[in-house]
Image 1: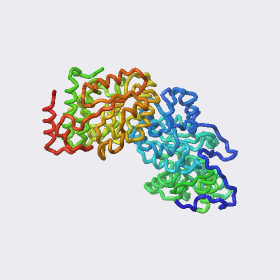
Image 2: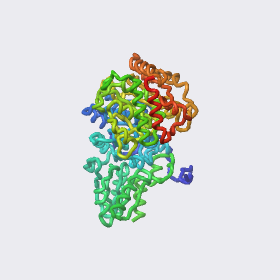
Image 3: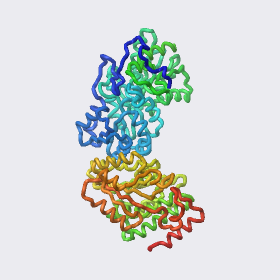
Image 4: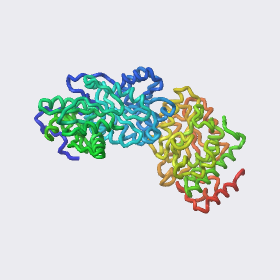
Length: 338
Length: 280
């Protein structure tokens, strides 16, 4: 790891942000938000689906599952700070006909409990939904809580469906959609005050479907999760640069909507930029690159994502700028590539 | 309650047939975890022919007691019991460990009727059992979850997560069975990781604990009965001290290893030795 990437006092003329808190809002100042969309959507779902249970590993309050727990205390299972147990027990619950939503942080599900998910849940294709907060770089707390590789790990797991939702509007729709799907699902979770963006795009989440949110002639941004929010901001900003930017939102990382991606990436003359809140290794970028290569579609291809290194602690805006996933950083990089 | 044909066959005969089935499977492949299969045959005989409710013709019968094989490498032993229980046809014994067989060398749920979890990676079973027991309680089911695991699995931290959790949730429908044969991959289990005093530890974690000679059928029966009838809302553990290779004296005496080597000509000798010890 290079120390040159670490913040130093006086290294910048800008005022130094000092918040490296574990939980930080990803909403920009003044942005419209909605509180706890996952928790409320799960309550809605559970009203008509008595088999739904909520399980967590000492992170109920930090994954918005406590809202479900308040409403359905008899269907809420606090498993303690024990992620391996959480996943094994969720498998056992599913064996007995329950529909468990198991929550923790993305780092703990993907890194600590991987074998348990692999062997007790995915190998038997059990109906367990794993919803995990702090995906990618959404915590300034340091690598212990920065799940830069969760998508790569869960993409590699057979039977696993992988979802990276963008905002509150989408999360509300993902919850019933994954409940309707039979089999294990890993869902990245945004919790607390979650940005509200896609309602203005007349957007509907469909499992396995990518959606073109806006069109543009020069650049196609293929993105998932909060990077779609950023991509839309970049596209709008680049109107001033007279650059047409299309945005293809790909919330289902696996199975990939190959048809939509090939259709949009195959339109001649557009640079394809994949933007993801994830390491550049093994996530959406490489998934799209592989698809294009295998299909003989060869546009100019660029990748925006987190570097292959242990990320620094710090304030999220600082870190998003440093690692190139803030709106201004993405815009600058795309302009440099044109 | 025993729900199986031929319930008048005594447990010693069941245990003998389980051992015999295991040896026949070992002979098919020329290898297998036969030392473990022989040591756990008595516990499996009591589980399937004394303690558990099940329907051979309906492996997924909702009213069955669940049996989790956390130590997936003991699959050869469980297959032997499932054959004896009429759940797997005896003819399939010859397919053990072969391509496209329902009887792979490591137990996997998708392959075999009544194999209720995929083992192989050790230390998973008790966590699944916690969830199953919670799920059964949700359904107000009276079924029990028997979970067999090995002393080596006590090294896994997740096992202790589950041990704490089962007590926290007062899972009186969970009956854990530990096979203490004192052998794991790298040597004697007690030397690899000091897990004793096991009974004291488990009691301190809030379990109802019994420790028996796992090759003494009457003692095992009494322990299973006591585990079932214990009145307090605690999970139950039966610690079974067993002898690797039990029932085949020359394998019992062989240098103790996690994976006992058996030469090609020895399988028949082992079957003969087992027969010689029948009904004594």
